[in-house]
Amino acid sequence: MFTWGPKYLIALSVGAWLGAVAYGLITGGDVVGVLSYGFKGGVGEHLGYSLLHGVFGVTAVLAGVLFASRDGEAETLARLAGTEVVPEVTPPTRSSYWGALSAAGVACLMLGVAVSSVFLYLGLAVLFVVAIEWLALAWSDRATGDPETNAIVKERMLGPIEVPMLGGLAIASIMIGISRIFLAVSKTGAVVAGSVVAILIFGTAVVLAQTDAPRRFISAAVASLAVLVIGGGVVGAIAGERELHHGDDHSEDGDHSETEEGLSPYD
Image 1 (tube, rainbow, N blue to C red):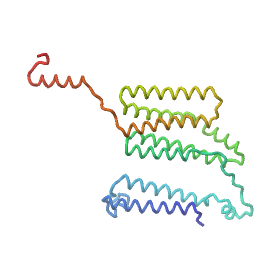
Image 2: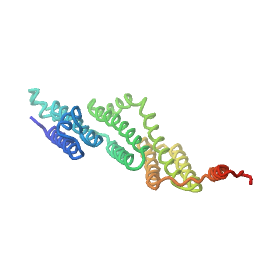
Image 3: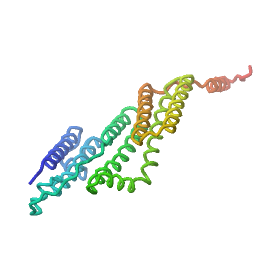
Image 4: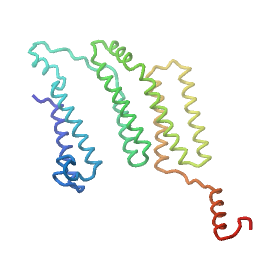
């Protein structure tokens, strides 16, 4: 029996495979090469062909997992187990912002391809952190029937690495955004932008230290600050780096040209 989850993923995997075959043929690959994954013949443009096959592989594996677990439906599992009582399912009780953060990671990947490679690496780091955190949250929400116990279990499992991991990601995001802003504006503008960012960071830290703010509020404040800085960095990366003028280099070039003509630079 196929539930809705495997049906959807199987359709998506088949569509991705057909898309990879069509993309390979359209971009210059031959039939044998496309069907043999490049073992005999060409596959066309490699990046798009590989990405589509990556989507096919991931969705196929997920479809197999959901089919084996019957999509986690309590009624289906009870029927397969031959029991009359449907097991109780504990719904998630904590809100999650990992979906929004994963969307931000995908946006960074697209910016990295179109604008600057530094955003590509940032997007990969964001998606890596999101995968770990979201997996731990989904598991801990159903570890026991008590939500408080589930939160304690997740804290014990990820506590030693969660703060350094998220802190490093936040610092890297802010530094990347600041660097793009500094490279786009003038020298005076870089000084002003640096002062404004420093005041915002220091002011936010002082306010959070002086108040008994809950952890969610602190996370939201840090995330908002990172979004503002990254947004400025994206604008700066799109605008491009400012032109750097090296007066000394031009004068040295002029001196060399005069010397090549047989004249002394002091004449």
